[in-house]
Amino acid sequence: MTELSSTLDVVPSARGARLRAHADAVFEQVSPYSGFGFRHHCRRLFRFATMLLERDGLRLDYDVAYMIAMWHDLGILSERDEGHHYLQRSVALFERETRDLNLGETPPQILRECILYNHRLMPVPNLSPVAECFRRAVLMEHSRGFCRFGLDRASVAKVFEEYPRGNFDRVLLDFAFRTLRREPLSLVTGIFFGLGHTPIAERGTP
Image (cartoon, rainbow, N blue to C red; front, side):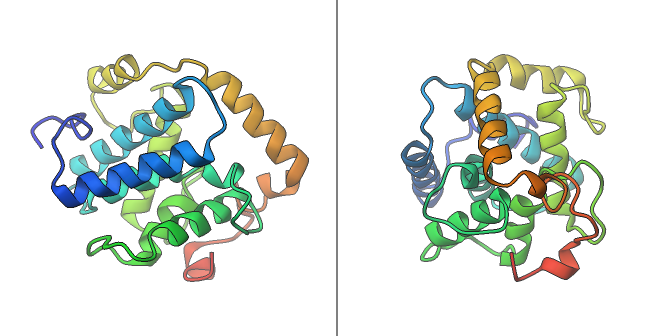
């Protein structure tokens, strides 16, 4: 990779193409939204996470990173997966959909952390550096680039230009309605704050 924001443009291997096609297929199957807002949100997250991974010299198969980014919110929408809150259901969906796939060398618990903790507003004790990149990427996304964690302003702005928000604000309103209706207390007991939950406490039992 020669450009930090080029990870969607690089032609993947045959294996990578299959993983990305599967990620897109599951996304389309679970997401009920018309328009490109939700899809672009996930792709911006992928770009920001891989920019941070590359900048920090961290290893994660970028095709697996694409799957994580495309599915990180699907627990809000899935009716098949179980968990105390929607991020746990996103983990359950990820593990169900990748059960028979080769996900490379990254330990499974780190892949779970990338989903389970990506919406935490504050740093999480003992979080793996790879998962921390996803947490920071979410903050970059929702701050609309105000938070950049040392990344070049122009590179971050380019991602927002290439993947405009579209109807994503309406999607966020629906997300909020679904969460408040189904699990309002989880906003402070696992999604944004966690109240003392750490990867050491939850690792292996999402």
